[in-house]
Amino acid sequence: RVTKEVDSTSKEAKSFLKQQEKRQSAALASLPTGSGVKRPSGMSTLLGKIGSKKQKMSTLEKSKLDWENFKEEEGIVEELAIHNRGKDGYIERKAFLERVDHRQFEIERDLRLSRMKP
Figure 1: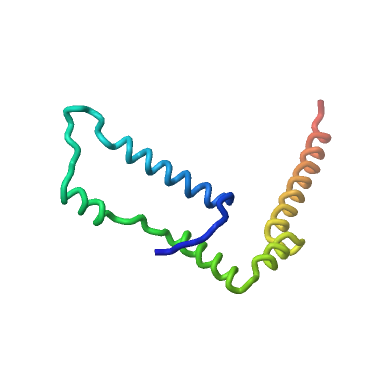
Figure 2: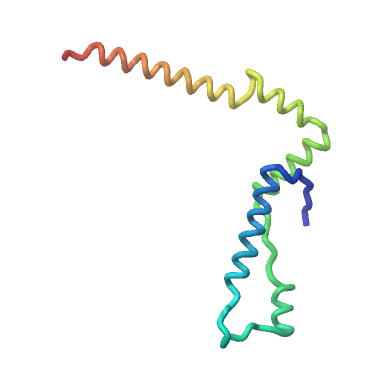
């Protein structure tokens, strides 16, 4: 079992609470509401709840959790945030290349349109 403490206002906490609400509403919707329908009770129900499969963590979720823990242990969270904002950051480089490609396309398009005869 893995536990993680997050701020109650964070995006991760909000998504977790939404998932819990969905599970509860699904559980309530699955219960029969008719008066003639019997609800299962007894030891089989209790054993079913205890022996039910727990939700497994995917590899990506585990890797993300491990990475977050490593960043906190090493104290490199702020350093990574600063580095990723700079010109050496991956996102900045991709955005720059996309802008250049778009500008080049516009130049070529204008050139093609100017060569066309009306």
